[in-house]
Image (tube, rainbow, N blue to C red):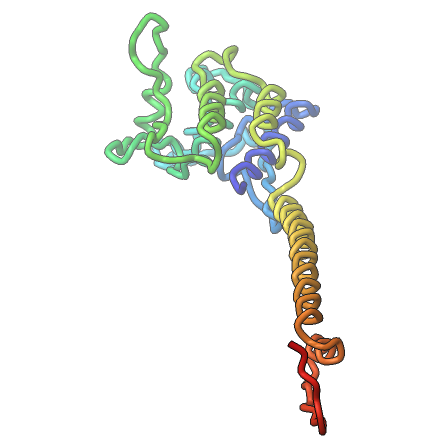
Length: 266
């Protein structure tokens, strides 16, 4: 439920951003997705693209690990184009979303390639910028999808659709990537219960449902107890004199009574 909640928040935020006057994010990555005290994911660091482009980059940062690492979420077509728009593109944001979704599902870090692969961010980017021949049998260079890991606690069909959505979003061709309106509809169909509320609201709603179900269960058990109690009372009245049976039912001790003479019926 936690992953679904964060996924819904991210998709709704990007859908709103693409529909606003800002139009694009351009710098979408994991560090720009923050979570508040109510476990609501917030998308940050968007807008002011021209101002960000004017930031001075020191010479020692140009070839640094951090310089290349922050570009791991950039779409390949933007990496290849030296004149790419500073504000990015909407399809580039969809590609970045796919990489964030991979991190969110498998929790393996940015651009996970397997335990045996240890490529640096610079080496990863150099592979990404290489144009892909559509007639070649070379597999698309993207993060590894672990086969021995269950990304979400859901049915295999839902997990398959979620992974298919991720792979469509990091398609090599920008035109082959869905927009966030389509992504939102797909995510909605995967888990309708959590579409309109965050994690805390979902937990409260489930607690309310549990309390309601518990009240119904207590009422049912109470009725069963009262029925059994009535049967026991009827049995006592059949076995004992009414005065003694009433005292036993009321939980009172029964005092022994002495008689000078009695008659026993056979």
